[in-house]
Image 1 (cartoon, rainbow, N blue to C red):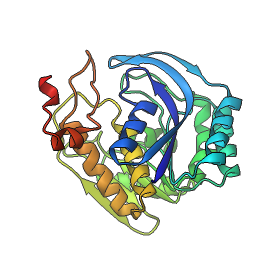
Image 2 (cartoon, rainbow, N blue to C red):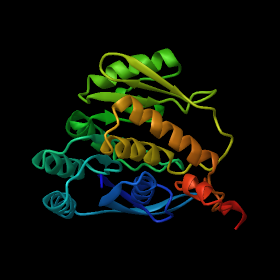
Image 3 (cartoon, rainbow, N blue to C red):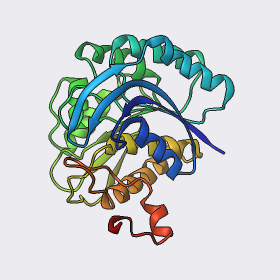
Length: 270
């Protein structure tokens, strides 16, 4: 069985972070493992508080997994501080990790900063260069590049600039632009455009985590990068289309919608 490891924060409401990643791996029939970098107290309306895990424990989690189990892909999400970033980068370099997907989580949908401002440089210098693919959305890319991105052409220019930070490939997500969401993959040689119909729903909690984890799962299963992104894009679109109206804020996507459909389970009616 193929495997994937998520290195990210825990979401107590289950819609994002570690919980979303593991659900996504399971939905793709990939065995999921986790390294928790922080514990967040949050729900669909926002983040209340964050407690970071000690760097030594984070590094030990990574080493414990790699000493025992083959890891086919890695997804990196929330890394709050520069010291945590250094610990993760050192550990992954030591174990010679491959197929690393970096989702540069910076701000939650409710506006809570999940990455300390001074840690952005450490992320650029230590984590992004070891990534096979980075998957920033437009606000994250704007922070990384210190420039505005307001069109598809500017997205392409941003991909070129992000590539200079050292990742093998860049997937820039354009959901913050008007119209149907367009994502652009720059593989170092050419651009690949992925577009799906925009779904009118507020229930999009954890979409970034889910997409990056789906890419990791597809890479773990041996799909080439373009097909891995295409499959992941279709998966997250279906998960949003069948999202769950849970909580009083932005509800979660439905990670197991395909399984429920296959078994003729009307989950939303329960």
